[in-house]
Image (cartoon, rainbow, N blue to C red):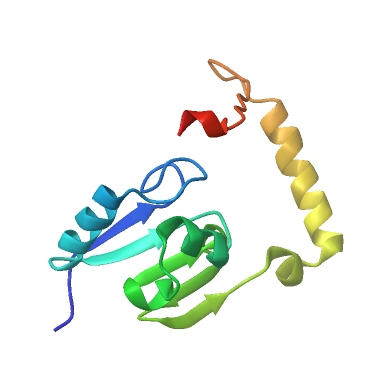
Length: 126
């Protein structure tokens, strides 16, 4: 029976603590939810990093959908259904001007707060 409802979850910083493994409580929650709805995982990291964080080697088979590398690698029902690389798709000659345009455009945006905060993970924190 095909499931009609789908819950998509971001991995790093949502299902898992930032750059850390999933908690046992979250694993239980996902397992119980998966009995009721289809589940998809979305992550900016590559598939290996998502596997590591989720603690599941056969991740693509454990969930209905897995989207790694910001959706550039897509699995449905354990099968690879799409893989795209922007550099291969556009080529360096088109990609460079596109990136330059985006960076210039973003540099001119007026935002309430324009800054980036990076925090280093301290192993003593958890």
